[in-house]
Length: 207
Image (cartoon, rainbow, N blue to C red; front, side, top):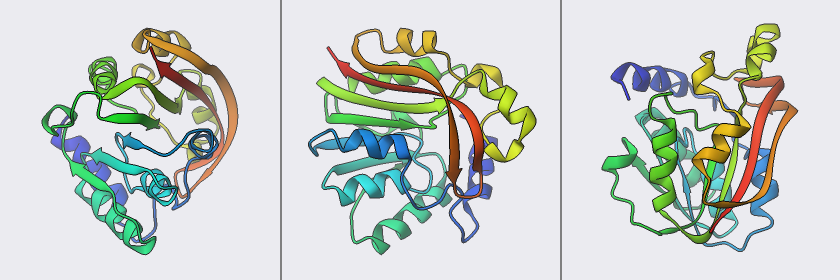
């Protein structure tokens, strides 16, 4: 991923206010309530709202992002909540996670560049143990229609960075599908996710 992309996220996360709020994503919150705490990984975790929430529930939490400002904010949030998270800075392939290290992976608005998004999912799969769980929520390709009406709902503007049900099925073909749907939801997450949007929601168990 480019230095330009890192600069963009550093700029977004550099203000005192949390870009997407301090509260966890609602879908993640619902799904974590169904699981026993174990080891969980949060890719593209930004300012740490989901990682800190999982740590408060008793999970052993790892996370990563390309934004040093995101990591700084996550450390601040973790300290305020009296929890510890293993937050690494950099690209996935350089971060030395171990095969089958995690019981769960939380992919919450983890919109990687189009050229690498599927390969990132395949790499992340190696770090999840058998019968481990993926919890996924991200904007669908249909979201562009919502973004055209209300840019405050946020999300990428490039269709190839957005998701379809077919792409998720393909990327996680070795999973038992617990849930997989495209839904209209109302977002109220900090400064940049506000209004109606279209998302793909997926919970899968690795076979």
